[in-house]
Image 1 (spheres, rainbow over the protein chains, first blue to last red):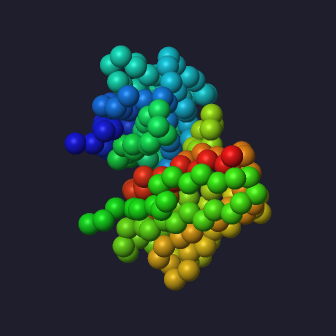
Image 2 (image 1 turned 90 degrees about the horizontal axis):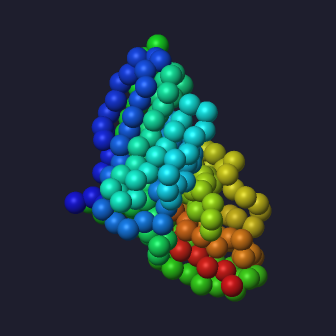
Length: 108
Length: 113
C-alpha cells in the first residue's frame, strides 16, 4: 500500500475548466509538497503546505491535516497547465513519500 | 525490479569537509535527476542527466557542487567544501525515455555541522 495516493491518475480537461487533483496520505507529516513536471524536464515545486491554504495565481492548494488530505486546484485551466502533478509528503524525520502523479492534459 | 537507491541514507559532516552522494537509478533509465530540500525551503531541481550528459544543470547552486554520471549508470553528487546551508535532503529520480514518470529514491539526509 502506498503512503501517498493521488487521484485521478489521468485527467483531460477543456481549456477554462476548473480542475481538482486530490492527494491522500497515511503517515504523519510535517509538510506536504505539490510538484509539477513538464515533459522532459525536471520537477518544479508549486507549494509547500503544513496547514490551511495557499494560492499562487490560478493555483490553489489546500490541506486538511485531520483528514490527511490535500487538494490542488487550477482555475481557468490553460493548455500550458498540461503536465504531471505530484504530491509528496515529508514526515518529521525528513523522510519523503511521493505519489505516482496525475497526468493533466488541457485541450484548447 | 529494484527501485532508485541512494547512498548513504544519512551523512553528518563538518563544515569544510567533502561529501559524495550516490544515486543508482532503475536499470535502463537514461534520465537521472537530482533535487534537494534544504531546511525550511521547498524542493528544488538541481540537474538532469540524459545518459552521461548533463541536459540541464541550471539548478546547481554554485561551484561547490559537482555531479557526474560516468558511463551513464549511477551518478554522484559531490559537495566540496560543504557549508552549513547545504544541510537538507538530497533526492535522486530516474525515468525512461518517456520522461513523464519519475521514480524517486529515498533521499540522503545531509547534516553539515
